[in-house]
Length: 284
Image (cartoon, rainbow, N blue to C red; front, top):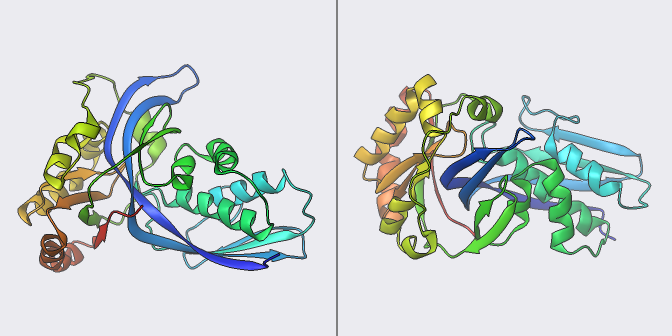
């Protein structure tokens, strides 16, 4: 049995987020297109003789108790075993907190995989996804191969083949509460149902897919959202969109060269505003 392991946790973007209705349990039914990207946290996970779950991080703002999804994920998995020791997790954060990039959910999924490997648990991925679903709606996606069209509360996943995407992302260095965004959303339009599989075959086609029903809610309070979109499009993006509940905005570019050119163009103007800009590409 291994005693420690190091794994990476990718961020995600929502290429499309449609909010369909509010359920009686308070959750919202959604239809969202999810894609992992090459921006990663790193988790170092180790077994300990001392019982308990011990989380540390390079980011002092990251909760380390039960408020952390990693803690709850490890706790839930350990309850299914007869393991008598503890687990220590160091989370090196690179994905911004509260950015709409799924960092917490990704870390929880990675922690589930890491602990299962360390304990030699022969669990099918569906079992880990079942545990992850109870932790957070996005967690099952990070235990899923490839891009996915997610329905329900975001936990019913179907694989979608998408073209390689080159991206530039801008994070304005403030957080947006997912709960706040959904609480202030008012369902006013349903729009035409788009056949994503037919349209999303090229970066150009992806532009037709881009939609985020939460963007209007967030941009009314934070005008930086529209400003970031304008900057990305002026730098050559085929289209730009806020990811998830924001505030990160990404631009889709024709190829790596175009993305690199835009990144270089935007880096200093964004730094002057106190914003973080980074480039990324889609990953499986």
